[in-house]
Length: 259
Length: 319
Image (tube, rainbow over all chains, first blue to last red; front, side):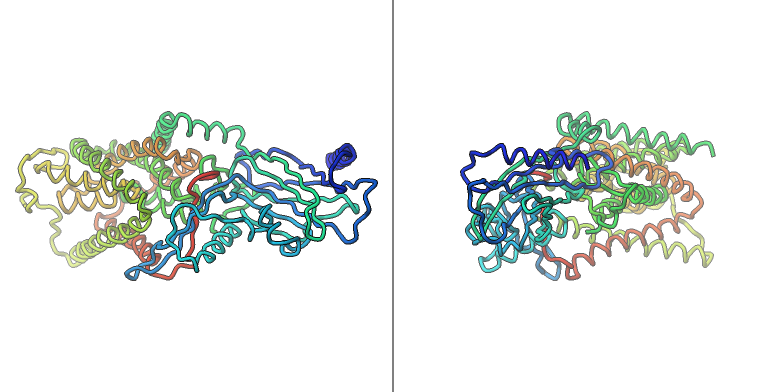
């Protein structure tokens, strides 16, 4: 609780400190932690995002509510989506489509549904919403144009099933009229790397302010040592694995010899 | 996804290479069950464990590479107990190994080719169906005939030293004292080569093919076959572990250790139980097991899949 309060105070101070803003309204955000460390007992975690809509004293107050969107986006990937088809009575992977520059993780929380936030151009430009990710096709494609959307939809559906993509409207909690809080669950299967936490403040379809923060997801301790050894000294790692295996086998035969 | 079912608190263990948490007891149990069968039948168990791991949500590349390490532990444990009983023909095993290494190098080339064509999965599934179906069927047929012969009281002549087939007419003969054999080295090297080749392409040790081939083609006594086959598998899989670690970096040492601890314990019980079962009964059980796995692959190929689509990470985070 003390930590939460401290963060809120920090958010407040940061808000008042930036009086030279170009916009009349400015968005200030803070993360509960900027490092997610993965250890042997890692089963996923939550990150909490706090923020405040700081309003210039001189600005006229606008009518209607503000809309907020917060996106946690993982490092980019190139992903192939395949579709099975029947060939000589057997189901085989027949068609495929490769998407480039796809986020490995994408969690969106917003005050209202994505479609109500603003124009298509705006959403596409800032990659707000699963349907506005701009899934660009890499290299050649074996898929006819009319079926390309099926592959996009299948990709988004599979990623949502894995818990790596999500869209949660109405999940931002307002603590006061200008302060808000939300939490984004990070599942256990998240890839490591540098994540972006983007926040957007909108009003009646126009973007007023945005912020971007970094979140690091990294292995620590034994997990990091093991991973580094496998990457940097693969021969030693392989021999270690063989030695460990033979030793385990030998140990078992010694233990079981007695009876 | 199946891995959701495995996701419970307390017993979770995060795998550093596979990058997912797993239920430690489920993995331990899988290792134990497959280890038991491996000790019982003298097989590496790779053809059972690899699909099991993939079905429980572990990435296929990690599954294939890590299983080779588990097979090393499992076969090392069994090799030692067969060694004590002097049930290994080392000369025969080394000859098989020479053929095996040659076959493996050719297998790696085909593996790369198929992967670049994007049809590796299909070839693996079809090969599993073909080889498991054929070998399982042959073994089932033969073992039922042997059991029936024994039951009706007919004289069992499993091995007649004077019996010859075309293999015994080949040149470059070599004497294998332990197996009481005097055969040409050509079929021995050839057998090692073919199984090394198939084993590399399919990501398995090949014991389930080696054991019947040694029995039916070379007429190696059943008592020596299992130990010899396991000895050969131990060396093939050790080198495969190092090759996987170097080329794909997908050997997960934490997953391997969990599997192998379960596996070696299971293998000890299996090896002991195998001593109390008749050869023909063992072969009948192994035949049913092999046919079962083959059938599972055939069903996957023939039935309409639940989801036609699948995704695979090519480059970037988590690939």
